Each structure stands twice: as C-alpha cells, then as structure tokens.
Length: 229
Image (cartoon, rainbow, N blue to C red; front, side, top):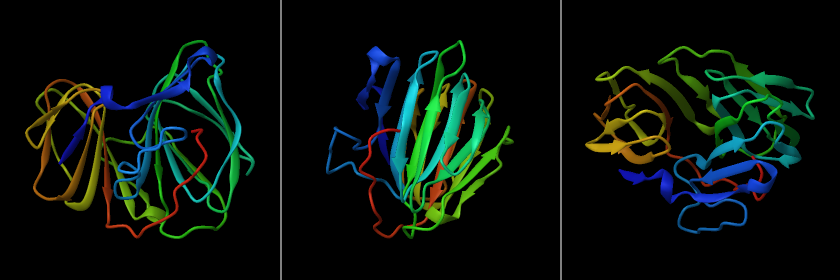
C-alpha cells in the first residue's frame, strides 16, 4: 500500500483567476514519469473554484472523467448537448471517447470544491457519452465498464467499518474526515494505492466520506495530453 498525502500533491490551477488545483498524478506542465497512473486512474484532481470562476471550453479524448462535488454546485456543459448542475452526492461521468469539448464553472455565490478522477479506457475511440446520478446511495457501486473499474462511495459514522474490495488495484481517496486503512491513518485529501488488495478494511475515526476505486489489471492505454479538468 502506497499512501500519498494531500500536502504532497502538485499545486496547479490559476489562483489569480479563482482556480486552485491539487494534482495527485503527473498532469499538464507537471511531468513525473514515475507517477503517470495507478491501475486505470491517470488523474485525481482536487479543484476549488471561486464564485464565477471556471474552465472555459476545452477538449478531451480517450478518457473516462468522473466528478464528485464536495461543496457548492458545478455547472457542466459539453458539445454533445448535455448541460447540468452537479451537487454534493451526485456522480457525474463524461466519456470523452473519440473527442468532446466541455465547460465547467462555478455559477453560484459560494466556493465550489470537487474531486475529479480520470480513467484510461480499455479501448480508445467511440462516441462520447454522459451520465449523471443524483444523490447516489451509500455503498451503491458505480460501474465504469469502459475502464474495467467500479467506484464505491462510503459515508461512515465514527467507528464504522467498511470492507475494501479485493481487487488487483484499489485507489482510496478520503474526501472528508479521518479513516484508518490497513493500519495507516488517512485524513482529508490523502489517498492510498493498494496493489492486490485482499481482506482489507477501513475504519472511520470520525464521520468520514471515502471514495474507493476497484479496478482490474489494465492494459496499457493512452494518456491525455491536455491539462484542464
């Protein structure tokens, strides 16, 4: 198990434009050949947008983009005709496939904070697709078959335990609170990369929200070159 602390993330974004970003993997101008991906995950970005701030229209391709809002509301619009408002508890997925462009903004009057995770698909190309699940229930898995991955969302009460999926790769991201995973304490923004996970559990030290990616062993896939969420 490889634990990565929030403070170790690469700081990006454009603070002058109201955009603050923390990147867990090699991303945009920050190139780290030893940190390109884990399983299917090729990016895990923590984004904070001030009211009115956002990412203007930009392209994506060959990437499964999954967004989890922590605070505020995210306005999404893409060139495939989808326009939506994403709130805490919602799971948004944009399959960029052969290519799509989108806009992400904070149109509200309070700061927006979200976690965005990019996964490499098993096969490139295809037609773009969009999905939005409002208020996903605790422990309900969300499948991303294009990347042979499954997202598990856990909201844990103090002292509550949850099993970690047995899988070739598990990527754990603490959204809020504090959990102990495999004997290691993880706080907000911390993550763990577990290879060949088996018989692991996470225990909440306080009320916590935890994202767990369960992934099969991937084939080598493309890595996106664009640097915007």
